[in-house]
Image (cartoon, rainbow, N blue to C red; front, side, top):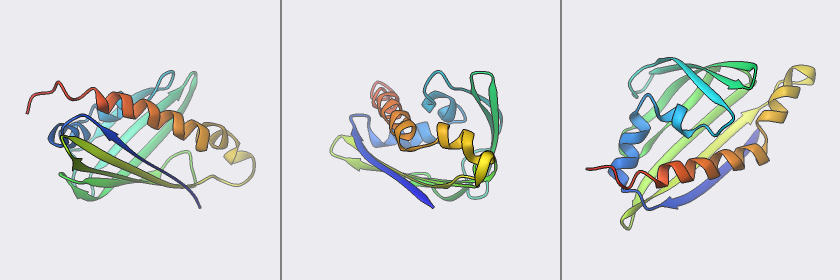
Length: 149
């Protein structure tokens, strides 16, 4: 299984970052253009809660369902694809106070389908595109500082 991991610091206060990750709008806001996310269902963040959404890569829709696990509202959670475009996808989100800001660590373990079925996901979910996604996320989360406690 492939693994991607990134750690970064943002000046946004930890409570604001933790609240942001609980929002049903977080996934949409964290997805970089030109990808568009259509949320069909997003249960409040808790162990076993579900997220059902479609990621639109231009005219190409990828339906995705994920279950949240190991949820700690202060330090992070894991989302596991239960159905979707990849053979397997497990994303660990961790955030902790660091000075007046927050240190975030994202670790993704993923596996593409074999053969032609995995061609599209190899193009869309690879180390280069994942790096771009987290550069974008760092910018979005870094702008949370103006949020009031």
